[in-house]
Length: 70
Image: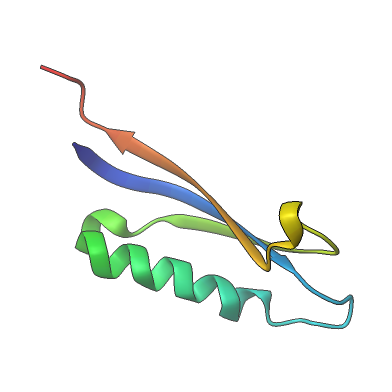
């Protein structure tokens, strides 16, 4: 069971002059908050990179806090 979304990191494949990485990352943040409500609020980092594995446009990593198994 999910207790909270702690943090997400968003990597955006882009050209050096692209400066709207945060706008791209907003999509991931908004989706998590829409799915989980207040539990989905989180800290975030966003980084522009020249390449990602398999030529992906965006990569999102997440750290979740979960309740222990009873």
